[in-house]
Structures are given as C-alpha cells and as structure tokens.
Length: 283
Ligand SMILES: [Zn+2]
Image 1 (cartoon, rainbow, N blue to C red):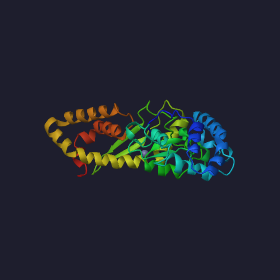
Image 2: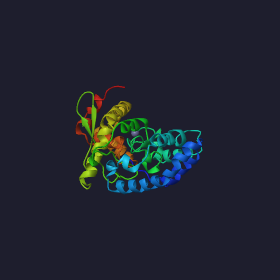
Image 3: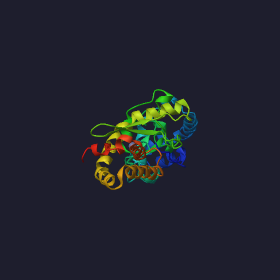
Image 4: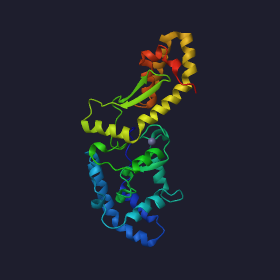
C-alpha cells in the first residue's frame, strides 16, 4: 500500500459545488439542507480514522433521512460524470496517485475512485474527498463487496496509514520446477498489533499474494534468457551481484513493491543463483 496526501478540499465545499451543479431544482432543494450534516460527518470521519475505528461509523447515525439515492446519484451523475461542471474535482483526486498506479495494490492503473466507506451504506460520504481513494477496478470491486467487521478487519487507508517505514513484503523462491515465488506480508515489529493485523487483512482481502505470484512468474519468464547468458559470462558471483543490483534499484522506487521483494529473494536464494534459474518456465 502506498500513502497519498489527503485531498485538501473540504467535504462541505465539494458537496455544495456538486449540489449547485444539479440541473433538477427539486433535488437541489432536498439536498441543500444536508450541508451541515456533511460537514460534521467529515469531522467524525477524521476523528475515527485517526483512532483506526472507521469500521464503527454507523451509516444510519451519520445520515438521517431518506436521501441515500440522492447522494449516490450526486456521486454517479454529478461528481464522476465526464461532462459535469465539477468533474475536475474527481480528476484531481484520481490524479493524486503517484504515477497513476493504484495505491492499494501498487500495480494496476488507477481507473476510478474507491469509496473507502461504501456509498450505499454511508451515503453521507458519497462525495467527501477524504472517503474517495484513487484505485484500480480490481481493488475497487473487491472492496465494494465487503464491509469490515472489526478494527483489525479494515484494509489500509492511503490517506491515513503509512507502511513505507519497514520492508514488510517478503518473497520466497520455491525450489521447484518450474520456479515459483510465494509472497507474504510480514508483521513489522515496530508496529502495534492492530496495524499489523490490518496489513494482513489488506493483503488477504485484495488477493495480493496471488497477484504478485502471477506477476513474478511473468517477470521471471522475461529475464530467463538474460540470466542464463549472464551466468555463462560472469559466473555465479556475477549473477548474484546483478540480481542484488536490480533489487537495490527497485528499492529506491518502493520498499514494498513486488518487484523489490522478488529481486531481493532471487539475489539471496542460494538454490536459485546456483542453477535454479534454469528451471524458470519458458515464456
Ligand atoms: Zn489496485
């Protein structure tokens, strides 16, 4: 998971801009009185996110009245509509992901905004920027289909959680034919237990072990011929040095990318560097 700076637009201001952009006066009139509720719900969100208790927010308590459909529509037909007057706000949040890469899986391209708290259950946050996270369609789909049941069951939130202080993504080279790479999320010893548990939930819920294993297999197939050539020319020590250099270069981009974990594992695997690389599946 990659952290992103929180959007600097307040929920109330965005809500009011979206409501002003509505073409139907009746809906505008129904939504306008909710501005204060949207503002105070944002304050609750910030307080609960700070204590990692967002799972405890009650959709009913934070949104009185039957305006769910109006709020969901405000997101779908105003904020995210391509031709809308306020679409620039949507695009601005979407563009906040570094390099256009999904901060949740750190691999796929950002295609949408993910409601950290799902919009049907928490309509008061339907257009609140702090609840809208740039995401790929896969992560968005998985997250929208589940609701955390406890604090430790919450996936990580790129605006409130930081995981870059520790190298927690671990890859292991399985000495089999063909070579396979297994990924696990470690438990950083300096983190509290809740944050460690949430990292595990994040990794499990988004299926990152499976995703990274498939990606690593593709990467190995791409470098197979080069590794065999390098080994013939520079020997085992040359191969180890090359893989370690590749790992180092990727660490400068991200400590916990699947590529970093993969190359660290390859360079440290006695079996792989001693000939296991010949058992990479041919492309
Ligand atoms: Zn993703």
